[in-house]
Image (cartoon, rainbow, N blue to C red; front, top):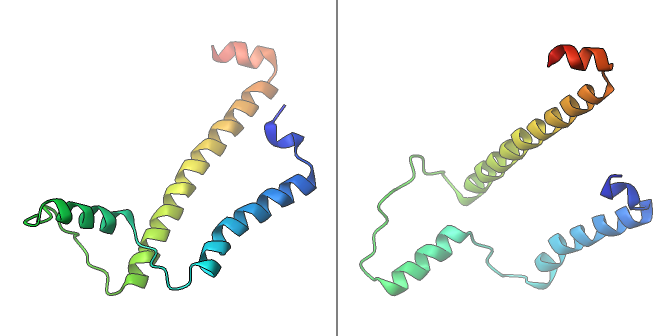
Length: 110
C-alpha cells in the first residue's frame, strides 16, 4: 500500500496549507530581511577568516541583474526537477508494465 493512500483529502489539504505557511510566513514576518544564497554567505565567512582571499573561479556569464540571476537559478532547478521526476515516472511505469504482462511474455524476455 502506498503511504499517500492513507491520507484523507483533509490531511492532504492540511499538508498543502502547512507548506504554503512555511513559504509565506517568513515573507510576512521578516519584512526587509535579506534572503541571500549560500554562495554569498560562504564568501563572507571565508573573507572574515582570510582577508586576502580571492575566488579562484569566476562565472562564465554575469547576469545583468539579480532578478535575471534568480530566474536562471529557478529555471535550472525546474529543469533538474523535471529530468529527475521524468526518470522516476518512467521507471515506475516500466515496473508497472512488467507486472501486468502475462507470465509467458515475462519468461520470454528472460
